[in-house]
Amino acid sequence: MIKLQLKLTLAFVLALSANTANAQDAPASIPELLSAMKLTKEQKVGFQAQEEFRTKTQAKLRQLTGEELKAARDAFYAQRRASLQELFNDEQMALWTAYWNGQRKAPKANPNRPSTASPVVMGKHEVPDLLGKKGFVHVERQDGIWYMINADDERFIPTGMNHVGPMHRFAPYNREHWLKEFGPETLNQHGQPDWQGPGVKRWMERIAKDHQDNGFNTLAFHHPMTLPTEYFNELGLYYIGKVKKSHVNAKRARKMSRDGKYPDVFNPAWLTQLDTFVKHYTARHKDSKYLLGYTFEDLPAYTIHHLEKRINRFEHHPWIIDIISKPGLTMGKQAWIEILKQQYSTAEKAAEMYQLDVSDWTGFGEVTQWPLPVDPKQGFADQEKMNAKIVEAYLKGYHDTLRKHDPNHLIFGDKIQNARPQPDWVWEIVRKYVDVILIQDYDFFTPDHERKLRHIYNLTGRPIINGDHSYGALRPNMVAVKGVKVGTAEEKGQQYATYLRGILNLPFMLGWQTCGYLETWEGTADATGKQQTGYFDPFGKPIEAALSHAREANANALKWHENASTLQNVYSTKQQLSPKPFRKPQAGKTSDNTKKAAETMDRAAYNVR
Image 1 (cartoon, one colour):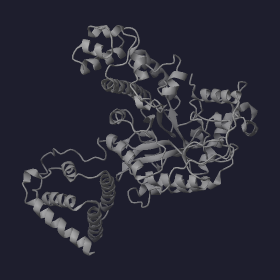
Image 2 (cartoon, rainbow, N blue to C red):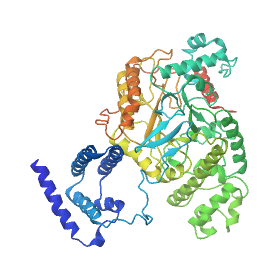
Image 3 (tube, rainbow, N blue to C red):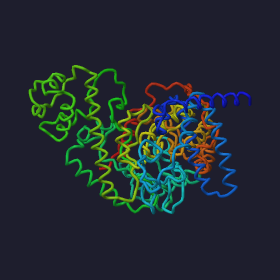
């Protein structure tokens, strides 16, 4: 108590000194005040939490009157002062106190004169409180908290399990089990799902049941594009739509595109093809009450550092090279030349940088081979500007086409890698063309993880879903397991609950879809080369040690989010482990035929043609 009184006395003296200083030096606005206070990163996180709590509390205070209002307001501001005094140092508290004392003494504004002040918003950009369209799944900010709202105007937290596709369901070790349950007609003569057959419908019913019996309500991002998601309107399970026309993931662009290239998003022909594709897809979904929104690609290669490999020296970004290496003065090459004009005073200087025999700007139109730049640093700067133009054209094409053919539903866009944070310019572009930010970020819920999420929100003002993230415990019949490593299945479930509670304490987080549904065993591996972690074994038996915690967390999810910014003890105390396998993998254990079968099934899951 004595320590707090001394701190208050010192803050008062410093504030009195600040009040007598030159008025021109005093901060004139909240942003100027916070800049002058020079908050640390930790203080910024704490202050943001205080502001969110203030917004929510003030909304509740507006519902009170009379003595009840006065008592609640006095109690709130006493608590706020104490919290800020603990958060700020003495000099910062003096600046804070002086500023608000000055505000209280300032003359009242003329109510008849329009205000010239910018609106106070959560996030860097002003965003409407309603995103999407009522009568369908949409998003609303209510009392400072973002919620997913269904067609009946009810709040819900979108939780789900990724990877419900055939690779996991019909692996060599569990194929016969599921064909017996769903019927042999589930797969056609080529071993691929007969998507229109009765067996597949029974399969979809099992997916819905396993979700709904355990508090999961959403068919997550990772499902085959050919999966008949229309069934889930009947089954009452929310689902994510996938309108991926082109591959822009680093590996799939080369392996799965028809021409082995990234799309030329400046080419009018690409927009025409996109329009046809989106029109066909949305015709089946635009009236759905269970569609959450539309997504595009998984882990797009927006920058050179998101090619899923280490970059040690300058490399041309393959998306850029695919566009600017075409013969003739294409629209994409014109965009590149405009960047060169911004970056270099003459065509000769640009040509010198890229070791080209070109003497004027039109000469670049004939270039089809681009050597490495003489100055790698400048080359990266040129590249970043072109990457930004490509990403903008790509996302705008999708956005405008979707809005044209389906004005009812939300746009989530690409599922964007956030384990290695994107540069700020990416979020500045993305925010213009999506309603909800969809990310992938595998982590424990820690202060550092929270800071990453807050950074995205501060740049975009858009609510966020973590669409892919898991905790993995190595179990029998596995060689290596996908996900953030934990020691046991029970710890996996506990960390699920911790992470869900942690993100839902953030008013801008909407939910999380975990990875995955059925675990896989040795002989089946995804693109990471590891076995899939899950909440059910390959034969559909619940892994109750993990699932019980997830089920309880899902039941509490909405209540947690309704109390965002007030929950205590939200951070995980776990550290990542590197558990030893139950046994060493034997050379040649996984046959080439098994690998090829898994690759074929995986490729079919992505194929949309």
